[in-house]
Image (cartoon, rainbow, N blue to C red; front, side, top):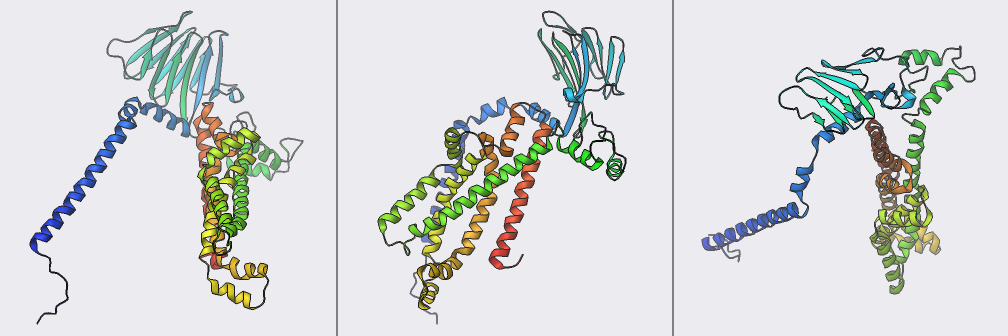
Length: 444
């Protein structure tokens, strides 16, 4: 005999209607998503962005980030030939590399993979194995180009004003009426440790190590260890010292801003908590202050402070402090409203003063949240400080933008990006370690 549960038994028609209804809802949601994607595609002009995309430009930047190039440049105005790494005056070859052959007015450049460029006076002859011989002559009015018969390859652009050929990512030849430039790329970062003209540049790692412990000084004015460190630290191409100082500024910006926000937000949180501030008016005012501070984005605060106080890390720290005071104050006030009153009443029962009640009855309960949120925001603000710095607050962000804005070699940009990522990873691990130690009392 079956048990009567009192629940209505669904009929077949009812089940069918339910299935149809769920199917319609599913199709309606799918249609809504498709309509939204179609709108976003049109509103953001995705078709135009794809059409204007230049993948070859991206490939060029990627190559420039992991490789260095040597310029063989002839100035037609001054009839002067210069061979230099990245075209830097501080990295000019006194003796031509083995792939450059100079014979009087003739300069033959071996570009690798069978490509050669021969410079004779105002003419350069580019020999491309898969195309033929290209002759380009710089005149007073522009350039004259003679191409082999057949279809012009897409890696070559020739106008009356300029000739630009890039057979592959490793070779490039440019000619204008003012100069002839031949570039050859090599994998790796050149002169990363020591400057081009340093006596240490040609030494291997083992030779540098032996030199450090050698009593015979290479420079009579300083020890070999000091010479090695100074040559690395003051490397004009990579600016390791300036990059380190910029990283330190970014870190200090994040630490100062976050700690200021935490220690200002905590007392304000007591004024915003319902169980600690009976006055509804006061609570309303403090909470609206929190809304005002966190309602304005950190970047906007940064622009305001840069306008008010000028450029510098202090403006970045103030921007972080203002925004996070609102956020942390709100989080702390909510934590205070949810504390256990029994622990507070127990401390009160001992005859403790109000300050002692806060110290031993309240603070221990919100300390895990205070530490956890403070460290989390410190880690997050390390990334934010980089962006704020790019606006003008200084630090590694400003240096990163400068390398990109001045079209400096992209290996410098990649170097700064890698250091920034390492800093963020270090802060992530450090904050995680501190959270576990301070909250749980052990590393894991």
